[in-house]
Length: 502
Image (cartoon, rainbow, N blue to C red; front, side, top):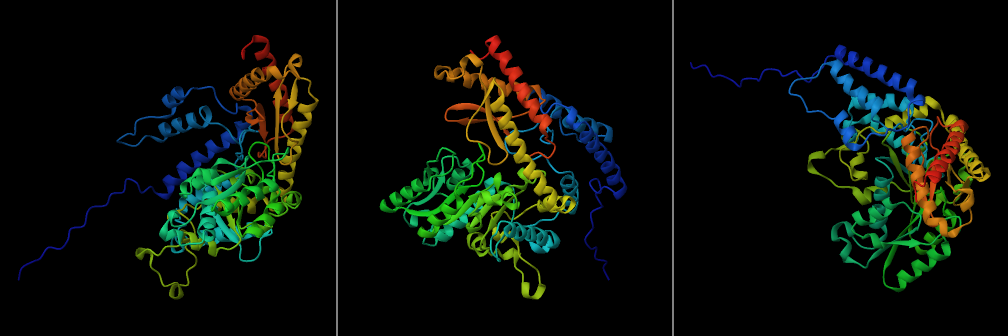
């Protein structure tokens, strides 16, 4: 009888399999670093002055063949954390629309990474999927949408816009566009104000409609969409043989926080059978609150709403939300049936696979930081803080209006954005000085950011370069508004006296 050798198993390779004790040791040091960051946050400059070349030299290094020691590793992390970051959680950060990052949300991200759920398939993420769907239903309810509405977490407003407009395209075009493509019918058109965020135009590009398919509708003096102009644009396209499919109403524009007349837009959409999408990436969170919801009358009539918790719910990046009136619109736009994900759900009792409701197959557990933040703080705290941010923007606007070296730009704040500029007293009212004032205020913004006490951004309003403060930061208070006013006057005056912007 001959012995037959079986397969030989390879020996274990355990280099990457850290023990629980080793993980605890690393985690303890990481939490200590995090705590130090929180302790020092308010005393550090918001951003640094280092150039790209200097940052690159400090934070990058060759990937080693052998592991770094823990001391070496944390030396690199300390350089990143304390020398080359822009601190969006700093009380002086008022730029763009970037939230400050909740403490519970940051802790939740550690657990989300440790669990390593793929929230594309229910069987790979049972609890995570149900939490995300529950969040979507809760948000839909707060917005006033009917039973059956819901949604999920996206990477941000850009992805939410893409998802919403794809659902609109597929449902409203009038033919099987998923199978036949866009050339099987007449050109499709979408309508949005001249103040709408560019991600909506980019979504039209990605959907094969072309950027010119998004018709720019003029605004009134408060930078809100004019519905009479909307009606004219739709009528013109119908007359020309095009097929209107959707209107994008903005709930909080990026430049000034203007809110389009959503109820009037809903009337137009109802008359023409169009999909109504609300881009609330910034302001949509305020529509969740009892105090500010009246500003958004009509949002409850939308077919889809996008908003970003990583903006005005202050949660860590990234995490946006897409909410839809009818969840079947998402399955109609994205559902596929790959053979390798086959499952008899009647047999298993498993739930919804989110890969069938959006463009991603693999998805992280981004909902956890939002969910944990809401649980840890409670909704009443959010109600109070969001309203406080609006009050701070009004305070900034009033301070700028009262200061003889500043002037307000654009409409009065509706939400938490205020715009102003530095104007030397001798140039006030001089229309010929506008090119110089634009250059001067551009320099003022750059110097404010480099100085690091406060960090505004800008808006271009009627050709004027304005300093723009957007307050979506739970650490910002009136003292920081006072610092912005004082620094703008100090830096603007010095630049003007020195002729730096001539």
